[in-house]
Image 1 (cartoon, protein in one colour):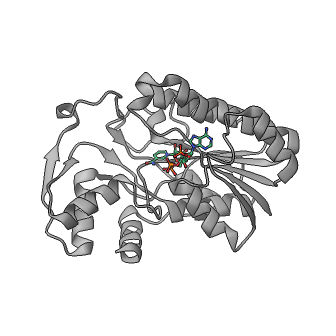
Image 2 (tube, rainbow, N blue to C red):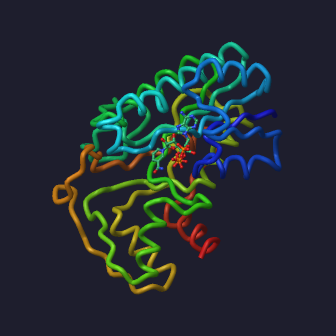
Length: 279
Ligand SMILES: NC(=O)c1ccc[n+]([C@@H]2O[C@H](COP(=O)([O-])OP(=O)(O)OC[C@H]3O[C@@H](n4cnc5c(N)ncnc54)[C@H](OP(=O)(O)O)[C@@H]3O)[C@@H](O)[C@H]2O)c1
C-alpha cells in the first residue's frame, strides 16, 4: 500500500508515519513540503506520488486564534481538505481525514454517536465540520473524530503540560467539569490501519479511547501512575475566560468503530502505556 501523509510533522502525523513505515510504502509531507490549502500543489504531488491512500493529519489547531483568524482556520481545516478530497477523487485514492469532538455543542448527557447532529460553537469548530463535509467529496473516505489527543513524541499535548507541571511541583489548573474521551495517537493509528486494511465501510468513525473522564480525574490518574504528589487546582469552565467556546461534555461513543472490528482500549490503559513508555 502506497500512503501519502500530510501534516506529517504534527503529533498524529509523525506517529502515523512512524507506525505505518514498517508496514507500507509511506511518503510523509510536512507543512513546509506541502501546504494542503495550495490546491495546485496538492494536485501536483498526488499526480506524481500516485498514492493508494491519502492520510491527512494537517490541521490549524489554534482554537482561540481561529476566532480572529477565520481565514487561516478555513484554509487549513476546510479548503485544504477539499483540495485533498478532489485529488483523491481524481486519482481513485482513499482519503483518511481527522476531525474533532468540537463539532458537537457539548450539552449531551450521554456519549455522542456518529448519528448525533453537529452543532459547532466556534470558528474552529465550524472549520472542522466543513472539513468533514468536504472530505466526503472523495468517494472512498474515512473521517475519524478524535479528541484531547496525546502521545506525540514532542510532548506538546495538554496531558504533557499537566505532567510537566507535576514534575516541577508547580500547581496545575485542571477542569473538574469538562468531560472528554482522550485519544492516544498510537491507538488512533492502529484504528486507522484496521479501517484501511479491512476495507471497512466508508464514513465517519469516533476513534477515541473507550470511556470518559474529567481533566481533573485524568490528572489524578496520571499522578497515580507516575507516583507523583500533584498539586491540582480544580477550575470550572465558567470561571475561565476563553475566546472560543468549548463543548463541556464531549464523551464520544466509539461503538461504530468496535462493530467495524476495532475495540479502542480504555483511556486509562492508554495513559498508562504512554506514561510507561515516555517517563
Ligand atoms: N490535538 C488535539 O487535541 C486534537 C483534538 C481534536 C481533533 N484533533 C485533530 O486531529 C488531527 C491531528 O492533530 P494533531 O494534534 O496531530 O495536530 P498538530 O500537532 O497541531 O499537527 C498539525 C500539523 O499540520 C500542519 N499544518 C497546519 N496547516 C497546514 C497546511 N495548510 N498544510 C499542511 N500542513 C499544515 C502543522 O504544521 P505547522 O505547525 O508548521 O503549522 C502541524 O505540523 C487534526 O485534524 C486535528 O484537528 C486534534
